[in-house]
Length: 489
Image (cartoon, rainbow, N blue to C red; front, side, top):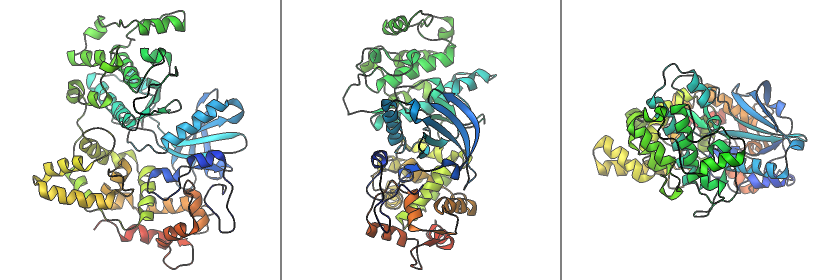
């Protein structure tokens, strides 16, 4: 497992091309610094359990992280069964997912490889696929559909703001977090996603045929293809049918039906929907992509506004956000690890609602202007709001991006006894202390953050934020003290 990392004390370790591809060259606080390509036996860190699914590439299994007892999903990809292009696509997916930070996009935790397999470890979503869930509901209405579609579109709005096209939106790539009736959804499978240059059109025909947009078939498309796919999904979940004839003898005939521009808007299943639902579906299935609304525009559509649950601002959450203090980048990084990997959906539910309510343009980040508006609404005092928001940004925007990310928001707005409970501090320490000897060495610190490749002087500065007795290691007491000493005041 020690094959990743920067320079050891004695010599520079060898990195593979793939490790270099995922590496970053400086310590910037963010969840992505914990995602890297590790080598070695994955069973050293995970207990392998039941099979969740199988495909031509390998299996998806339920696994338990030994140090934290957390359930996760592990996608095993057999190297001998994938082509070079598929291997490149996998690393592209990892590179995209490691930088994504959104409440409705699946989290990637780790990437391993051994001589025979790659292993992608993600959060475990045990609520099943969206379509399966909807078919089991005894009562299903437009409000339920609007609530789920709002979450899907917020994930896409975030992706599109990052110039990322998903390119394979379909019901099986929309998963429920848990069996809870109120559980949120997560968009998964970014294996075909593409980072595009703004204004550039894509030419590769990719995706699942039933959900492919007409312009994809013509090999000239942009992110609007995701909107088309979601239009097909919305039509399907509200009517139980597809908007075009799918009883065909060939793929060419199916593509011909999609490209005809004539869709079934006269069936009794469709006409029994509300006028607002019908109108939105027609907009999403607009043949001309330039006339198709963006994900952000759809989130402001009357049907979404009226039917979906409203995201509410919690005054309690905003008060906690204003009290946040931090004096160490190392502390900020560890707290982001805890928030991103150890907090439950129940613990983050109210925080996520407040974040979504404040995120007016739905790009998955909070700007100062959005924060000003929210605090002005609360205090009815523009000057007080501006002063408070400026202070919050100085303390919370740990990577100086000019915006507050979702995980930064979770860290700053969570209750201290939730985020920094003894259980979570213990779990975080064990994740760093790989050999279990009760101290974190410099090499162990580099191993868990092995996407960061820095010189000795920079690493010494980072370790010095924890290592108060100067012995070059981090004891549990030093680790816990660092996390708790500058907690909310």
